[in-house]
Image (spheres, rainbow, N blue to C red):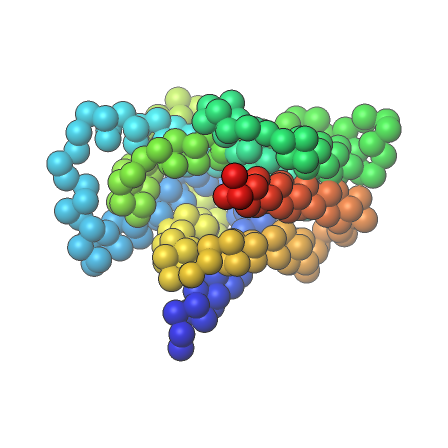
Length: 301
């Protein structure tokens, strides 16, 4: 099998796992509260990533740890997994999975906005229009297809689901500046995140053993959302001769996620959810086209 074919196979495998997460989150949260779920899935992810680091010989990349490395991991662990998943799991617990799945896909839009603010990248009129298109999709989903009313079915849930993208984009801005080995630094980030999550549970809901289905769901999420799939995706990007080709496959994910939510969670997928998702994804693709046009323009000058 050729290298690019392997990249496509791994990309589709990763996307296949990610497509199940909306369903897994919603079903597992029926047995476990958000803080405890995050505690368990992070513990599973740390165990998995530690095994990968040891088996692949990346353990040497962890040492020596400088003060800067520790500070960076402490900050990145605050954004992901702590704040991002805490907010996202809470959103899933109070709004339909179909809304949480689609609103969470605003993170590429927030990444563009943050790149403009913190990395001082220029934003073109087309990029600005793309952002507006994606946010229009958010309003369509949140108002169940009646954007003129601005009456949100669940304002808190919408804010949490959409707001989680802020923490994910913040994490990726920091990640772009951190040149350490990806898997090794992710392990360190999760260790710090686990400390925050443990403290949060001790200060709020405490710990209790969930039902078996809650435990199984937590293990599944820890491996296939945070652990194995992350490693597979990094491998995909390294194997691919063109990262844009495999990255664009990600946009299959929300539509397949909605199909699984309908089948396994039993939610009737609203037409407004589909339309809103098309707006969000359309805005992201328009932004990608704008960025590509700018790069080509720069090369000609």
